[in-house]
Length: 358
Image (cartoon, rainbow, N blue to C red; front, side, top):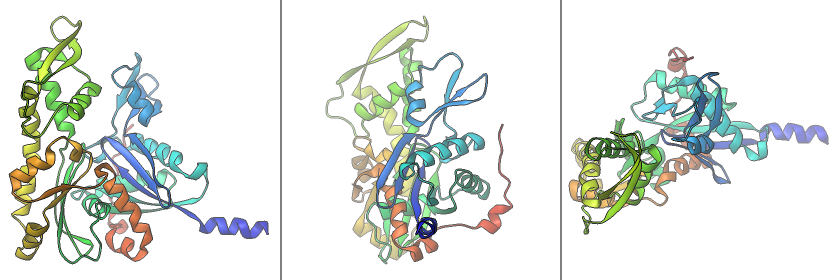
């Protein structure tokens, strides 16, 4: 009897969907939903080069690190910037997401940006294999986000998805379960944090950390001109001139044009992409409008702004941050579709050199 159980175990797999993003790594397991949602960060001891914390634990240290500790993001613009550390971070997250630390053989489907190079894709695949995943499928982020936002794989009419991540913006036009047109830009909602920090430093003489700009973006900033432009909030940080702790009052009217400059870039990319479509596809999008997914879709007023810019209906998917991972995990319900939509050009990829970093 024991023998039978152990041989059965070999047949059982943990099917995992991994959205390895610039800002967050989100993992869902078939039948269990989202099991992990943590920042894509590591804390490194600069003297020993050892990783001392991953994910949320590393994020909690950010801006308040010990003397020899630096918090780093091993992914930039949705791709692997530091291979060795991405591999270790992914292995940590996968282990954490496994069913009660089980030794079930793993298969995973991962998302990737549409303009990923063979070298970048190979690095992602290799990192997943090193993390103990037996079989890895890779799928375009835009397509995964479309399925996660409720687009049906057998729908012959086209749908448009704008996936606004932290480091990338993907625009995908999807019909009949495949991408008919896509654009990927290596910028996203993180740009808003950067321009806010730059503005505060240059014009208000205040140096602020990542946590402060993120809070400012999510609780105070708006992509649409606010009714009350005089509304203020206090921002605390370090005085650029004296180095002392300091605070400044800023208004929504001051923040709005800074945020608008980035949202305009995203909207312009969408507008340009929509001018490149075939007439039938354009007709479908005119009828249906556009769906926003990704963490950037949570920015206040972003849907209104893009709607007025592209002059089409714009809606936000349910749980926009989880659209991609929910779309990926759906693939396990339909193995034929999984084979059809994933890109595993391993023959080509095996020969791509991986950028190993010390």
